[in-house]
Length: 143
Image 1: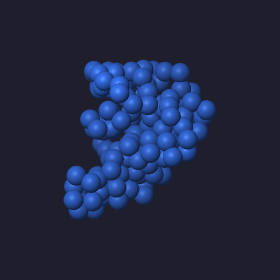
Image 2: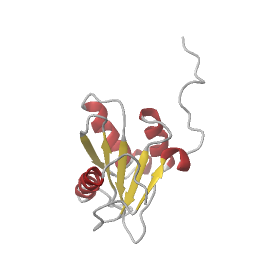
Image 3: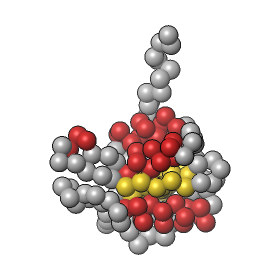
């Protein structure tokens, strides 16, 4: 399995951070707990979990939660992502999360997918392979 330029040690740290965040997920409606961890270019790791709401549209995905932590810490780029979902097979980020990631990374962003108990991602996919033609704001007329 190719894991891109991210080292095995870094993937381990990302999966571990995502797993810890997943353990704190608030998912009383779906029962589907997700944790994510994003890597900043300087090596800092920021984790997040899904947070559901009785008004379903207000739910926050783990990946967007992790990106929010990255931004709150003053970072603006994502170098890699690990997502830990329930098994038996890992799940991919939803469309909203893919669009959010595309705001802070390019198509080569490696996304590692795992389930609880995994120490490394079971698979690593590029953002561009799972999210073609993201809206990147270049079509918005600048005022």
